[in-house]
Length: 274
Length: 273
Image 1 (cartoon, rainbow over the protein chains, first blue to last red):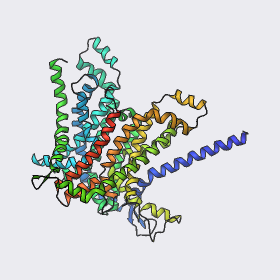
Image 2: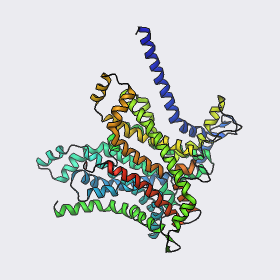
Image 3: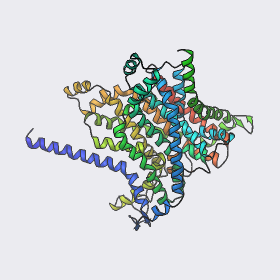
Image 4: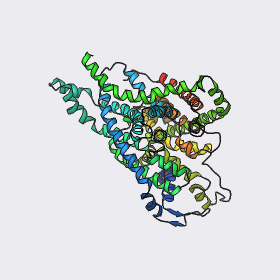
């Protein structure tokens, strides 16, 4: 091949890569950018290709109304759910990762079930159970139903995190006379911290975005952002729904930027691999 | 294990287990129980009704899930192969975005994008590809649901498949390259067969989650039948207040999921843990 031909081939490849990037960016961004356009739209009469009037009108209106309330209660629920899940799961995950717990496979299967089976019909019956103890349509009931899914996420990811730490380091500490408890707090836990942060953020995000359980258990009194967004979207309040969608998406995108540093693919890819 | 540490591990495992058993396992069983009750008596009436009213919805749900899964896998297998062998950081990052976009946001975003008066038609009309007098609709059809499910699941698929591909030893690929294998051949003959077990797990999970998808078909599916199963269950409860039939529909969805789960369990070995 002549030099010119090589150069042409290199150029063609670079152009193809560029085109690929643009295409992928379009596919990924298109549904999200529509939300941005709609959120700033004040007036848009069909069949005009662009909004006739744009501005912050709906943003101002929305931030004075129900949206803030939904955001607040959703955040509160997510924070409590995450904290409780963390407290319940960290010791269990360590136990499952390190010790020959009896019936380990059964325990792991139970913690897989809510992820492997359709949730909606189950949650319908769970709502009935929660009504019986007067927890449905109340914040604690919604927290509990979130915890079902959150625990499943947490047990699997956190077990994977603890398994990714070399056991020999803990053995060394114990050989030097440290107790099991001390070994856990001074060796295992610090080493696991980045992974634990990643899975904690995932649990938080799960609770913040949970829709099915909140809709069934929380209705009609508990409003979180996903439920609020759903109602406004099917009610054709497109601007309000788009603003809610953007706010709802924000924590996830922030997390994605953080996860680039914290997250290793193996935490997630362990999921369900008994 | 000593008795005291057995007791300790029981104390640690009991509270989270109790929550999952109480709010998932028991409701699951009561779902099965209620599906056989009609007006307080044991009967198969609910299932007869499901057969009469919803058999096409079952097929519709399966159809959408299969098409979406095939598309997701097809794209992920080759895209990840390219990302593994050649590499493309920007594209890799872009494909992670949908993982962090909630389902309801996907539903709403696609609704706004793909509706007859949506942003896509509006943009295409600018270059003369769409007649705005008679705009085509992708939203509110099965295709809208497929597009949304593919968009959302592709991120997870890319993450899982790429993880599996990365675990394949570079030496195999290098050997293949020395014999002049193209990128396509390296994917087809080396990466794909070696990553097959992980792919089966990923497919089983994605298939059941597509089967059970609720918010996306609720927001972007058509208002009339056929509907996806979970939407049927929801309507059956909300508008007809008919727990029996709703649970029978639920049982059908569990059975479909169980078929997939069985296949998945056979592929996965328990010895790793």
